[in-house]
Amino acid sequence: MNQNKAYKTLKYSIRQCGEDEIEIRNSFFDGYPRGFIRLLFIGIFCMSWYQNAKYKQPPFSYEIAAIKEDFIWAFNPDKEIYPLYEKSKKIHNDPEYQRMFPNDKLRSYEEYRKSYIEKFQFERIRAYFHPIWMAFLLFLFCLPRPRGIRVNRKKRIIYAPILNGTYRVAFVPKEGDPLGGVVYSCYGPHPLGGESLYSFVMAIREEKNMLPSRHYLGVYPSVTSKQSIDILNAIRAYLTEDNPEFLKHIKPRFSVWHYIATIPFCNAFALPVPFNRAKADKAIESALADWNKKTNNQKQKWFKSIAEEQKLINEEHSAEGLDNQAK
Image 1 (cartoon, one colour):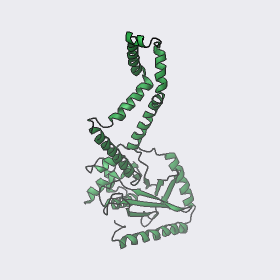
Image 2: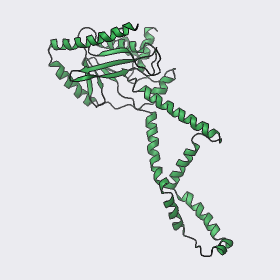
Image 3: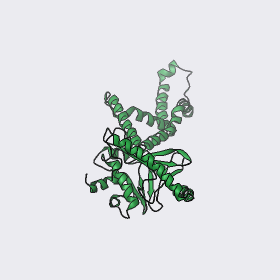
Image 4: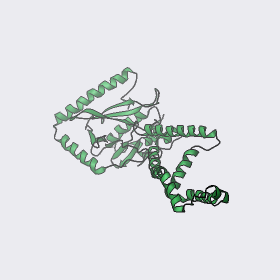
């Protein structure tokens, strides 16, 4: 793949958040679960279509009819009750019926109606739950897109939200590999990717937290087999060049439409998760304040420990015949 084409594919994984910040989208927790849910919906639709085809009915015909009936009993019960009352009234006024049941008095419509309202109380209650589960299914179909990691070249940091609502912050060294503050792998897990597709994995460590936060990055499914390497090179270029070439193809929103149908299938119509800028800035300022208290020797020692960990990962990939340092 030529370099220009590689740059164009990055718009599916990277978006511009401002003049000095980009975001790399999640992979494992974004496109994959949404695609799985949508595939499950298609499976359920096909099952309903097959079952109803036996009776020459469209899919979900029984379920739709039951929902409509619940709404009628909840909001317009007279539509069902009044015809039944008229039929009952006609039978009751029949001379033959009166001869056979002389003591059976015709009830008023209100009395007749009340008995049916009580009888179909469950259907009336159930009608109010239909909009809730319908909205929930729509929510699952448009499963929100979690925030990915962000790279800020002005503050020279890489930061990401974690599950407890806080942020992990990594610092970019002034010299050497700009990714010297994180541990990464270009060969992370990629569900159904076989032996050619991978996610880009980045781990951010903090001194006060023993376990690093791992982030699986890049659009799912991958656009190309070199997607992780392209993301790696893009981050390096963004942190070392004033106007890297790939930025010409990056937009404020992630691209989702592609001729590979699985990409829009897994990523289109996703609800964005709001980004709390004030909360992020507060976490960044706190992390920067702690970092700036360190001496140069302490900073270099920290970067050295990460570099040693990264070296082990690179050697493991190299033993497998994989290049984790592509440039």
